[in-house]
Image 1 (cartoon, rainbow, N blue to C red):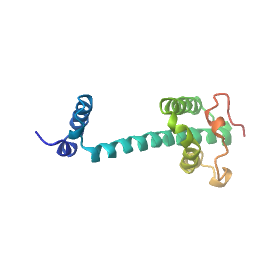
Image 2 (tube, rainbow, N blue to C red):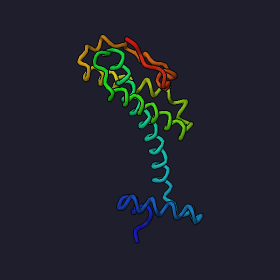
Image 3 (cartoon, one colour):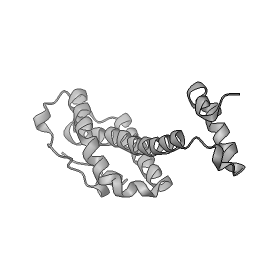
Image 4 (cartoon, rainbow, N blue to C red):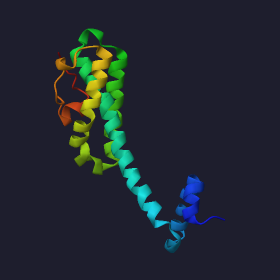
Length: 147
């Protein structure tokens, strides 16, 4: 049987199962600390990246909703509703993401703007250089931007 460290490179899923077993049994001396720390840090990054990804989609649709009202579709509305639900869920499941929310919006905006420009075919200068929506607007189910 490969060592826990070798298992990490050979069969990641088996490595995870083995570590869950080692932790349950209190066999801390056998833990592959280096890779476990790496994985835990990576999990935190994935949560932040998931939040940013959802904000990119949400903000892009809010921009399209605001700047191209004649093209509004149920699909845009559905996407806005869905992403708001998912963003709130992410923050409910991981409350430590809340302080990261303002910087996640800043990180998401350039990509959201790019999507809005590509999908609306409007010139980038039509849109604000910085995100026009506050944290509260982004999450508020009652908020629908107007032209």
